[in-house]
Image (cartoon, rainbow, N blue to C red):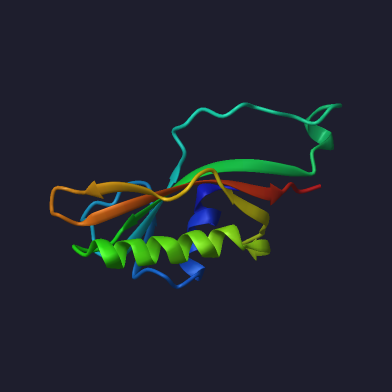
Length: 131
């Protein structure tokens, strides 16, 4: 599972005008950014080694960069949170997302320098490994 697969899945939800991964150079309103998580997570493997793993975990950060309304931003963040937490058996590109586990509630991170409200969702993407 690559970050681009997660980005494509988030874009398929149709919640934002723009969905990007990596840097957002011009900070467009009504955007969702998809990043690899910078948090540390424990590495785990199946007993018997990686060849016996049936699933993998990819940790991501979803940034809702919306507009100057805290109400609109929270409404969109809640819709995104609900969409990811209810996702089951989703095929995107050639990868299958088994489910998505938010790691904690939505985080309000305030505004950027232009006064645009932002909220963050940290999640673990549980995906099926290829045989």
